[in-house]
Amino acid sequence: MAYWNDPRVRVLKKYGILIDAEPEVLDSLPGKLPPADGDMTLHQWKLSIFGEPVDVGIFSLEWPYGNTKMKTLNGWGGEYVKQVLRHQAKVAKQRKQGELEALQLELAEAAGKAHVPKELLEAEVDDLEDSLQPSVKEFFARELEKVDDDVSMEQLLQKMLRFMNTAAAGFAQSQQRIEKLQKRLDALEPDTADC
Image (cartoon, rainbow, N blue to C red; front, side):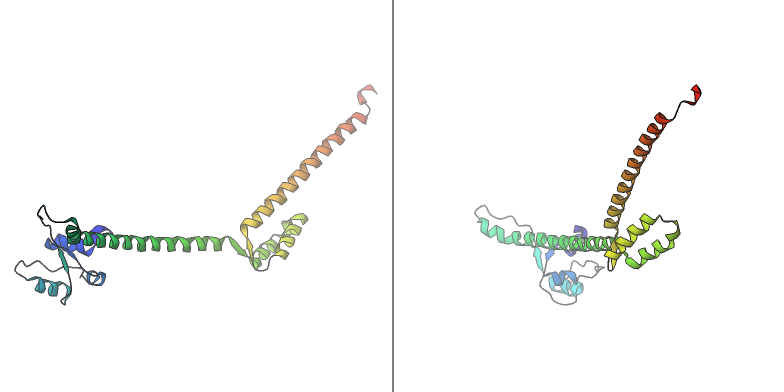
């Protein structure tokens, strides 16, 4: 809650007095405050605002004598300030807790999207079966056999990348062997220009 939405600040702006009360009393403050009437007593004012006589503290600035002890001064306004700070900290904590819960929900939803039902993946493989190479069909058959319910997209992607890397490495080795064999074959063929 922003400080200007704090019930105490609203009362201060409207009536020029700084109040304090229990959180339930402050929460019962109406959205629209009635106009100020300077001739009202404090009791009448509390009835007009809260609808019942509630305990409300009034914070006032004092000009104490120089011989007033500090522990006395601490009791005058220090507790009020501590309560205001506690209230603000509580409100901020509640807001942060709400934000945290929203982020946790978002994270859970994202984690849920990171898995695909096994049946859906099987259906996709079946739809593409005619265009898939036998080794790819075997890969998916092997991987789907290991899974009971949902397929982790992250794990499947990692396995597919390893599978593709192995296939690419095998292709590169085969290509090198073909090139070597082609060179040998070229060396064995008689030079047709000499004939």
